[in-house]
Image 1 (cartoon, rainbow, N blue to C red):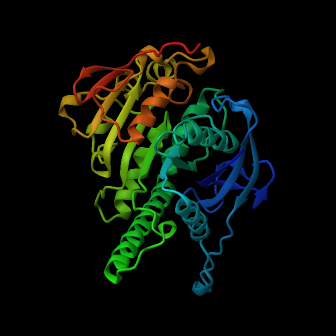
Image 2 (cartoon, rainbow, N blue to C red):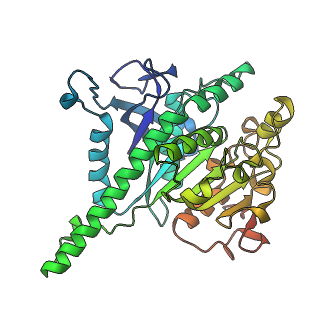
Length: 372
């Protein structure tokens, strides 16, 4: 079965379309890091396990045509307009949420598409259905040599404007869809007509965000640009934000120049962390960075907005040795089920698989019984 993943990327594009997903390189768009292109990729799961990267195949990948001629403003054509028409048609078929995904360090475009498709299966196929829209910044897809880490970090920061612009367009599009739904319902009631249910999918299409690892560092710069584009305001656009194994400073959620605006942008911010995350320990100890948000969670949780909650994954972070206890967000079913429950609107306290650390604010995920 194919999954269609919609994407935006400020990588350098090589082809307008491809049969295998190799439309982008690992550097910036030739017109600058602030410029991005949009399109879709069809990804097929060849096996039964969506957590297995090797089971996925990236197929037909297409960039939407775009014309930005200053000489003929009336002939300008934004690829995002075509993307939103395709997305609108899909969202009209059923009442689904949208998850924005920001990948982490050392991901090629192809690998980031595969991760997005996996998350659409893992997170978006629960009681509340969701589709994933991905932003792929120009990580070089390589872990070694070590200087690639800092190269990726600089590229993630430089991608902030493109991410902020893409996020603003997506948020505006969903707001327009919800408004159109409301207007149609009100008009039908006013006229005494019985509306066609297919045309009046209730306006509950929520927007969520998942950022993994260095994607949280990219998010810092994206939301700063988003707020600037919003005239200095931080409008509520997200229902849930999931900060997964965040390679960000532990005080980021308390600092306005870092991630603090998320408390205004989201109804709830969920910080999944693990003190035994080997990848973040290396980031902390060997690269001269402050303590990581994805290791011990937020500093001074009591002083943060009550919208911010913490989920300790230390007991269930173990996966393959090469993953460095850093990939539990997509490989451990305890986390997957916990995210699904949140998307479905389950209460935070008293949830199966959670042990309360502080009622209403923090929990620990317990290891689930083995499936037999």
